[in-house]
Image (tube, rainbow, N blue to C red; front, side, top):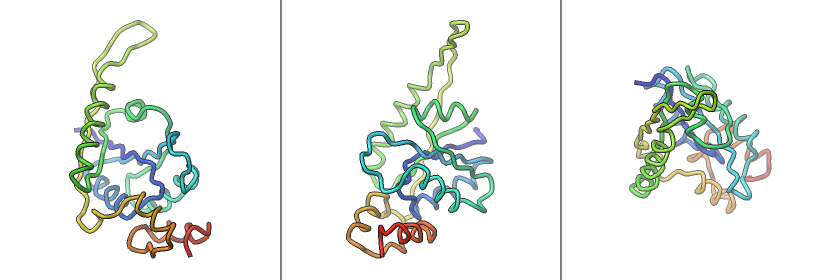
Length: 175
């Protein structure tokens, strides 16, 4: 089995559910890379890429074997750059499974053949996705729910780590 896992996402913002999955993945793998993606489709993110990386590094400080990096482009290329790695994805509900299964299948197909520009050879290299069910106490938590609740000033202590809440207060996102 791969010794490295990549947990990708926009983490806008990082939630207690994300943190739970990172901690659980760290217990299963020697190294977990939290990959913060540059989401070019999202027109107005709550936090900049730099802020998301900083918050995640703060949240993950003290979790052995966890690093945080940003990436742009195809997930399979980022995962491949980490060597023998698997993709970790969390599942909160049945609707997540449909979307995540489709993405896992697409990523597996996209990773299957690597062409070398130097000598024209092709090699097979499939990247697997491992699904972790969300702890039931976090099944209702998502970044989009946090963003919506922040808009209406709903208390977020049960949704995000303390440092994220502190940053949200400092930036005037919540009071």
